[in-house]
Length: 551
Image 1 (cartoon, rainbow, N blue to C red):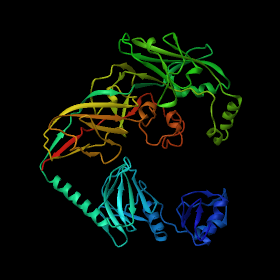
Image 2 (image 1 turned 90 degrees about the vertical axis):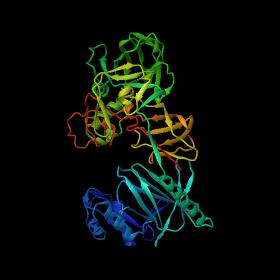
Image 3 (image 1 turned 135 degrees about the vertical axis):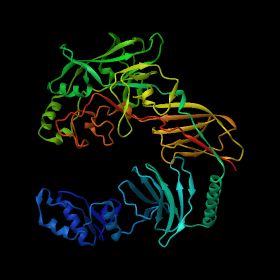
């Protein structure tokens, strides 16, 4: 504590916000009292803490009497802080309403004589125009975080600083740099103004819109996958269990309280003629600890390399697969130390002990990897939050050569975790001097999207805005358009069987049948596991557009 500032490392704070809470530590109480006594500003939000280390304490009540107590809302807290500590910027929407939302975040940094402002919209609201007023003077530029390039922005002088106007799409971010004025300042603003004037003139010219087809040819794709998350279990030459979720087996084995020999049987179905020799792998953790058989024939447990994770090892099984039903048989010793079993007992009494548990042996799902498509035998339905759901079961099929790009999950790629490259040919009425823009009417359902035109890479799309100037890539007549869509590991790893389908808050319990801290609204005792599979959409929900403007 120094001069009314709360010192933490190299950071100093003039305002401390005490969030809704029940109890605080005595150390925190002592520090906050010193902070307030030196002139620091304390903001407290209801419900206020009533206890110090779990015990009622009159000193805490006296401290809270000196605190500012706004409502527990973003706008109220922002207003309370602003009265004490002047903000470095202000943001309003196109109606002039102050933006104060949990989903709009700003970080600032002073670096080599410049000020950096990182503005992020992590919510779903679209702001057609945001007035960003920086409460300092200087020249504002926009840093492209994908390339490192900078672009000077047109700015408006205000009584308190300068203002720039930008759209802010869901998931979009800006890195703004504010530099001291220099001799080139006026010239730069004129250049930007002329550029925007030119763009405005282009927008008023006659234009032709080409809507691309929904059907694309498949150029290439990384190996496809199928998650095997159900199996049968046999313990020490006993009876085989029915087919059951892999996530339930760990607890069954731990409940025995001792080490045992186990066998796991994973069934899967193949719909192609196996006379064609193609690479096929089973992917699993620690294959060297298992004896592995495929359809009764032993295969080498030697790793052929890793895939998607350093602990995911590939084991070749190509020559052992047959058309129809197949079985992968795993045999190993399930071992955990006496200390682990004691920790399990302790966790039944103290929850914190369970948070520290680690196991010597864990039973996990396994994965098939190779050149194949995956077909569900029961069809698909749509759910909330872009979910695509099916009851299964799944059969390995051939990969389609032509796909409808809006529904790649349903066309052989439900568990896919990689990149697919698509191609189509279009005719464009193109003239030298024309301007052209590519845009997606809706964001792609993909983590990364790359565009090539006539063999030249145009842009990698990671976030809004999903558009690009493509005038330098088009030719008159036929043009070759290629898109590469890359998704995440969500559809590979799940959670696939959560009772709510696709969920945005995921924790360890989300992959089990027992509700945890991320599963609010699900009563204890209710199984979260359902047999159906839930994926998320992958592809282009609406065909892209090309707009050509003629001068």
